[in-house]
Image (cartoon, rainbow, N blue to C red):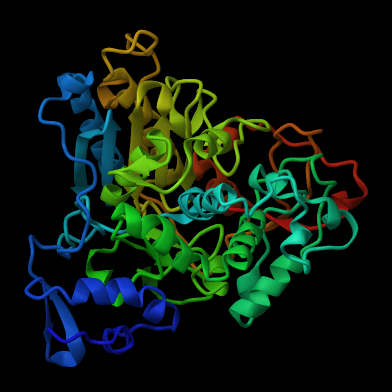
Amino acid sequence: MPRIHAAVVAAALGASSAFGISANAARGARADALAGLHAAVGRAGAFVATVAGRDAASSDGLPLAKDVSAVGMSSERLATVSRIVQRGISAGGYPGASAIIGRRGYAVLKRGFGRLSWSSESPEVDLHSIYDLASLTKVVGTTTALMVLYDEGKIDLDAPVRQYLPAFSGGMKDRVTIRQLLTHHAGLPPGRDLWRTAHSPEEAREQVLATPLICRPGDCYEYSDLGADILGFVVETVAGERMDKFLEKRVYGPLGMTDTYFLPPASVRWRTAPTEVSPPRGYPLKGEVHDENAYALGGVAGHAGLFSTAADLSIYAQMMINGGEYGGVRVIADSTVKLFTRREAGTRALGWDTCNNRGSCGSLMGASAYGHTGFTGTSLWVDPDRDLFVILLTNRVHAAKAQRPAKVIADVRADLSDAAELAVVDSPDGPHAMPAAFRVDEKSGWTKPKATRSKSYGKSKHSTAKSSKSKGKSSPSAKSKSSAKSKSSAKHSASGSSSSRSSSKAKSSKAKTSTAKKTTGRR
């Protein structure tokens, strides 16, 4: 079957920008060329999937365990997981979800719930439904790329960033290291409204690099999207190519993660979960990055922009548990995985968050657990002590019906992690009793939020606030002073990061830079 150029297909299907046309043309072309699996039909080359209602090139992820007891899990307790995820749909927190729990190289639960949208005509969610990962990009994308480059001796974690990016220099910036960017201790603000001020990805990049620090490097903790973006620039500079191409070549391709990409091709849009209207775009998004600043950066950014499926992420999670290897393919050294996932500052590891028995990781994960969340309603947690991982993908930002959707996703994430740990029956140090606060369903005391919720579109998801200082320890952002205060704070709580959930009210910084305005970042 002749290959139809990705640009022609994207244009025919109504692609609205150059972002979604060529970034993954090679992968899209490979899948589209499989004869009998995708038929190219007359009307400008629209694709028709012919295998089990999905693209044939999609990965199935980890094999499903035939007997979960063989990998030390309780089938009865795993049944709780389905009730937890379904509870979030019933509460109006999200229209559908894709979840996988894995142990000892097998998936012990893998299934979809609900639909891609609230419409009864919408496709049902399955393991091959594609979700906008939001800030999971920081670890599955940017941090992973840095681990590969670190293995090759091309990255020095304690070298100043200006060594790789001369444009990021001057004053206190000269002291900022790669390690400080990874642990969010570089002194950068959480974010800025690039989508308002930049007129091209190149201009957005310049503005990121020109952002002034708000405190001395190493002295304060500020979860920063901008820091992740700068790390992405470092990857591209050192690798000599765009980050999405580097990751496809060195990680996703070798591992068989066929549905993980920035800038998803138009041919997979039909199975991609929609998000919402997000500025500066005035239309509902589907297959286009939800984050405004990632959009301003061209769709490939260090802090957001990656799309994937639960099936693909199960391969990634097992690779991490295996110490950088999966299916006979090694992409990262075992020592590097251990280095990057070990707690460094506060609750932060290098790029990763760690579990402190609260927040999205629940209260039962082991001391070595690490993971991350995404604002769109995604999360990935790995517990290497028990050879266990938990993946949840939702599009909770899509027309949520719950009055408190942030609480719904926060509760579901925490309870899902706890349920997975409780299903482990052969770990001598694992939990063996149901915690009193466990919210399995409404019968156990979980209060369902009201069914209605007002929603507004078109406003910035960032707001200005003052910095906070912590002498090397994690401290939260100060209260927002902008009119977008409630929306910004909801963004942090919805992400469910253990470090953000443990935050208390922040005190104003006494540093000279404390009066500088900043914008709150996403998780």
